[in-house]
Image (cartoon, rainbow, N blue to C red):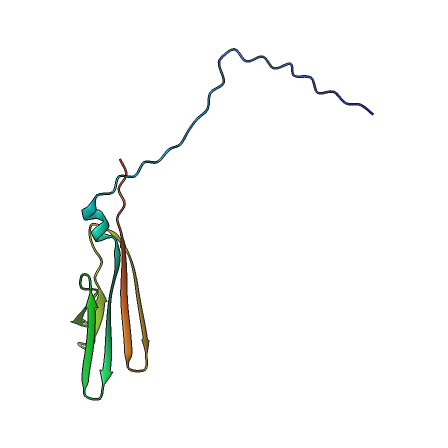
Amino acid sequence: MKMDVVNHISVVQPTQVNLRVKFAEVGRSTLKQLGVNWESLFDIGDGTIGLLTGRNVVETIADPITGLPTNVFLGDDSADSILGSVSTGNIQLNAVLDALETEG
């Protein structure tokens, strides 16, 4: 059985192609703000040793209900931030990933 396809469509206007394109402009100051900031605390006996890089990640404040100290992650108003914390035994690791985004 032989089947033929016949095109009876007539197009008056020329064929158009829609393109969706994104351009990115990144400055050196923006690259400096993009990154991972982390801090780590190690409890050794009666003392604590801490390491910190980048901006401050966590601030310890008093819980308004219990009055006990609690950690608060500090975001950045100029960036979208992903926050995370891991505690195991006597080691605590806090991290923030900042990524900037603008449209326009």
